[in-house]
Amino acid sequence: MGKPWSPSHVSEVAKGIGIDLRISGEVKQDLVTLLKVELQRITRNMESETLEKDPNRKTLGDPLRTRLGFNRTRGLMIDEIVNVESVSSAAVVAANEILESYLQRILLLASEEASNDKLGTIMKRHLDLVVSASESNKDDQLIKSEDDSVSEFTTDSIKEPKFEVLTSVSLRNIVKQFSGKKLENDAIDELLLLYYDYASSIEFNLQKNVSLGDVNEIRQSFDKFEQLMMLGWMRRILKAASEKADSQGSNLIKLDHIVAIDPWS
Image (cartoon, rainbow, N blue to C red):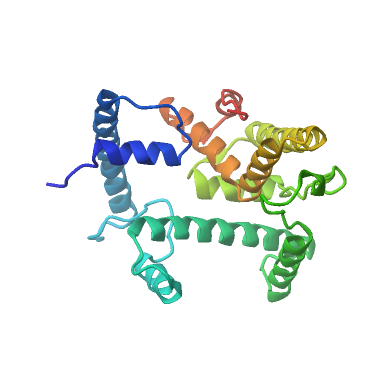
């Protein structure tokens, strides 16, 4: 029988996901139990969906999509490490999540370039345009280290952040990847409005905190901006909407599922 996580380990995980309050010993133990029950549900659902997709499969897989190979990623990471001796499973999982987000982002942008050319195929020139633009933005948007003075941050430098451009087509692709469900048209319109409202809120707060000289708040705004660019905000919203749809037995994410979510939480 598998051994569950230790309460202290779960507590450390909680710190890593932004929980700053102290957690009592009883709560830590209860969290282990809750996680174990949730994992049982997840595993059983994944097993059922894996076999529904491939009845002859002998290994539990991700029934929603194909992921980057764990061993291949770990091997490549081992080739790169210098000052540590090995690569943990947690590091590989985290690296794969970042890689898959990166893959999704560049392909969505390349898809837009292909659509602009009225083509149904992503060609090399479309990918080259996206990569070139990405490298250019990196050069133009270098963020100063903590040792830099606040005066280096100016409203001119953050007046027009380059937020990810979403369309109903690209949003449908994101939904398919993140939730496995379809979105009704009204829900897509609402999600697009929320996305740009959230982006505008980040821009407003960033400019306000620059004028106040609040370095910590400035960096938090940049963190939110980075999360938005990496589609982390969209992933959270769609996950919550998908869970609300599941609770109502719906295979479609509807407008009321989106409206019920607090995008600023």
